[in-house]
Each structure stands twice: as structure tokens, then as C-alpha cells.
Length: 251
Image (cartoon, rainbow, N blue to C red):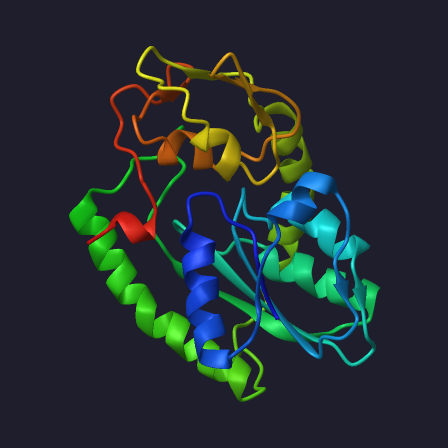
């Protein structure tokens, strides 16, 4: 089974490609990250987890779900990360997860896909996104073949000292910066509710056709990037910036 967590669609894009090659079932984790419940994976011999990198770590809501899920003793686990610059310490997180849950760790690897964190980074032009997606296809195909053949990823583990630093910094960043309180809808909002539908944590509610943010947020940027009218802003950080409407929007 290929399980993915996605905001703007990068990880879904990679997961779909991998599942096409392996012939595995595809599972969107959003129903579980919204409910906080685990997944019954006791019948799966192999799982592939596809997710973005957040502050050098896997998305915390996804880790919560995986740790609550059930597995068989024979389960092998692969991890594939999508990111704008680097994989960070995700491999160390997943290695620890596998040890604690009795899974066979098959490795962690990843690929660069278009940047979507417009609050703090420069967004890529459509031409740049097209080139990045083109370069990623061979990487994703190779990963799919590796999983299908039952081989391990050959990436070396990240520096354990960096992992120790990330373990301290990430919870602080998650608590104090990954908040929804600066999101707001401008007068361009048409009340379509797409932002609420694409939020993988369900932290957006439509009140009188106006989105309201509350609760847990991972800054996945689904709401702000996928709004069809580009009517969502984040404080003073995003005005005038390009939006990334996902890999399927790149022709």
C-alpha cells in the first residue's frame, strides 16, 4: 500500500506514480490525520509512505497516525519524501518509528519538487516548476522499480547530530510558527469552500461562506496555494507572491 500526506499535491503526485509502477493500493491519509485515528495495515506486507519535509522532519500529524496504526510482524516500510531543498533528518525519524513498531526499515529517499512554502521562500515560475517536475520523473520511476523489486534504498543515513538538533527545534517551530492565525481571505474570496476541502487536518470551517482557521495547522499551504481566486493571504508575508497550484496545473 502507498500512503501519502499532501498539501498542494506534490506528494500525491509522487505517490500516484509509485503506485502505478508497483501496482499497490493508494491511500490518502487525510481522513486519518483529521480524525487522529490509526490505520489498520495488519494485512499489508509492504507499505510506502510518501510525504513532504517540514522543517527537516516528517509531518507530525502523519507520524501520529502511523504510530497509532496496526501492522503485521512481516511488514516492510519504505519512505519517500518530497521537498524544496533537502531531506533533512526524516530518515532518522522513520528509522526510529520502524524500530518502535516492529517494521522492517527499507530506507528513506526523496526528490526535489516545486517549492510551495510561499510564506518564507521564493516561489518558482511555471517554467521552473516544469523543469523540476521533469527532472523528478526519473527519480520517482527508479523508486517505484526499487520497491517493486523488494530492494532497499541505498541512501546513507543523515548526520545524527543534526537529527538531535532538529528534534529540539522542530517541536518549537511547530508550536510557535505553524499556526493558522495569520491566514485570512480577501474580498476576492467567492466562498467556494475549496480551502476547507483540501486542508488535510480539517482546520478550516466556512462561516457565512468565509473561511475561518482554527486548531492544528502544519502550514502545508494547500489553502493559500490551491485557492482558485488566489484570495487567501498569510499576514504580510504573501501579498503579490506567485502561487503554486500543484503539479497537475503545470502543462
